[in-house]
Image 1: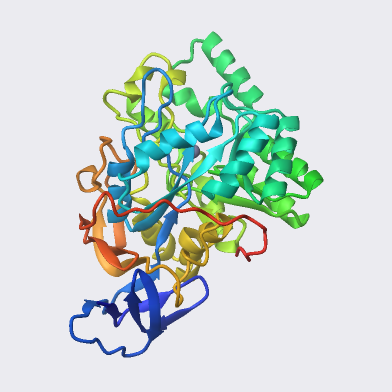
Image 2: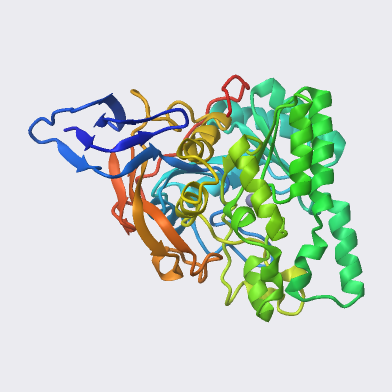
Length: 466
Ligand SMILES: [Zn+2]
């Protein structure tokens, strides 16, 4: 039996046109006008709807333990069901080893929690918190055997941060085996210094979270990493870029010809630091790292998404209960678990506030939500494109549908949305994963065993990222 999606408008990173799509065995078999159904074929009417390549969220943290007996509120089941209903067909999460731990043991831990519990296709980046011969050998094995072709690094946080020398060694491992190095770009010494100072001054409320993470900590880290990558002749992927200062360093690195890529997230495009100064401890809902910046930074980042300086919009979904987890930091903001949800809201928000408000084109939306992350993280051309032979993953949007974000509709285990009450103009109508409608009108129709682990191809820098 085949499935035919009829009468929709297909929108990819490069093209917009009307055609029908024939799906067989989870793949796109044919794209043309007026495909005639055979008896028994399933026909999906997409009249008036826009069909995009399935949205990929390249930055999530599901079921993540993070010290003090706290684990993120959303696990792989709730997180990927929320993703599916929100129009996302694939996620890339993180396996985080501790220092001294075998990388494969860390991956096994994350696979145990995710396998059989994912409603959408899933993969992992591996975090490298040290560099030595053992890590080099184990990282090579993960690239070759498990298709883990991206290494996450940190310039901040005692348990994760690496030195410049270790960063250079990790770039060497990545070059040798075909992986992309990702960076959490904050200068750890600046963070520690500013937090100590705030504590000394008795400034312990959540309104000081942003002060503890100044934008110059981000821009310094981007600048330094870009220089180290320039020296090593290696590309770099900066996660969750938050500030105009950080962006200025991305701009100058790219102007110098360095392949430095940047990801931002809906919170840095739509929310601002004013939220840290409203309603007392409510501010804890927005305690995430890096923090929210000035409202003026929002527009500067939107322009960078439009102009190609930022190539990916992911979520950094890292959800904690406002009541029961975030309140661990009631008396000290440095004890508030850092992170916010977003996996369910991303597609609707970026469509409503990016496309509909004229900040980015529909083709750019396809590029930053799907095509670019697929190319950067070795999922292309199975994912990230609507073409014969590719996976039949589609995010189908009704451009006329309107709604309002309400935590009750988001399928989360967590108890709040950072975007509660945001009006939506244009919303996900259907999410189709490998030919199967897994969500329709925000109703989950899939299963938690549908998602497949994705072994990713090596990064060789050859794919054109726009
Ligand atoms: Zn993250």
